Length: 290
Image (cartoon, rainbow, N blue to C red; front, side):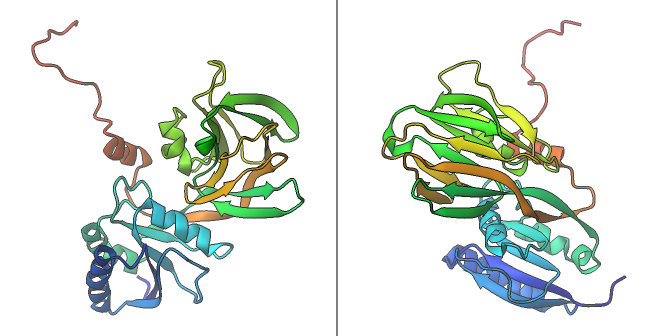
């Protein structure tokens, strides 16, 4: 059993009374554990790379807080454990009580680190400026305030694929497949796949269906016409207006999202619990066909 201290970086979603109340309880609990050292505490939505070396980052909040944390860590990713103070919690799937019950497993390093695909989204403006964002869930283009259907030209690996006439388009990672992609009718992907899923939002043509392709390719998006109000979104948290002549490039990031998982964790069990997959419905007063 390891004898060295487990060094933690604590990331809290914000300084709201509810989050800070949970942090006070957690801080008191961790202080009672002689094999744990709190190396750094980061509070608020503006998160930068950790200033210290640590074994794990403990994120208090929900999946949105984890999205901000891994983007803020940039090229200095570290394993993350999420304590869910939000709603669904696909990534932050431990309650505060669950975390306390699992603390000896953390101290003993009785967990595995699963690496997940992250992406870079490069926004090249028609004026020659370029800005690149790191993300975990998805890049999406929305008709948004334009209140009109838009055309999005897609090419993959330099090969023209199609033009989507729709309310928008989502390019999602497997982790993000249970987020906006799912609500738009896209497929759920196993989280450790090296792939992207492209899902149109309310497409005009019924033949425009979601498409899955490999993460080794670059995905280029162009809009031949950009009405006022069309937006680029990264993980639903970063929003930039699009202008005529802009180009969006999505590619595999040079870093991965690192999620600490305990033994016995099952992705499909998480889906079962979070999405209410209870099996076949049972009806009263019906006879068996068998």
